[in-house]
Image: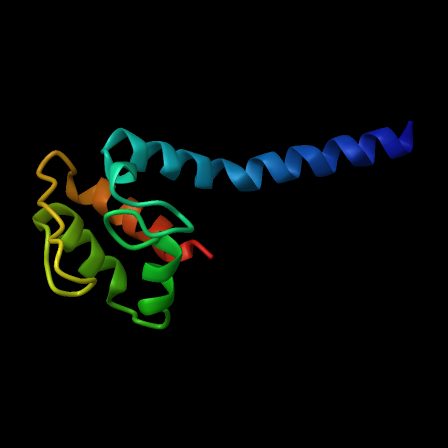
Length: 104
């Protein structure tokens, strides 16, 4: 009985800690980010893990990426420009940027 409770508690803990990652993946999917990006491989745009590595230690990265998510950009990752995403508000852009920077 005690072992079952410990197993149940560990499982619940794992689900709760993974919930924010799923929520932000859902947000990225709902905003069509995943049409051009993937977490672990380059598609049209860079992999999110590569973006996280590039901006690691940059304290202004969340704001930089949030602005790029909304306004678009070019030249950082190659010749294909990132289009503006006017349907993404500032709060969601910062949430997405924070999630992207946390990917490994």
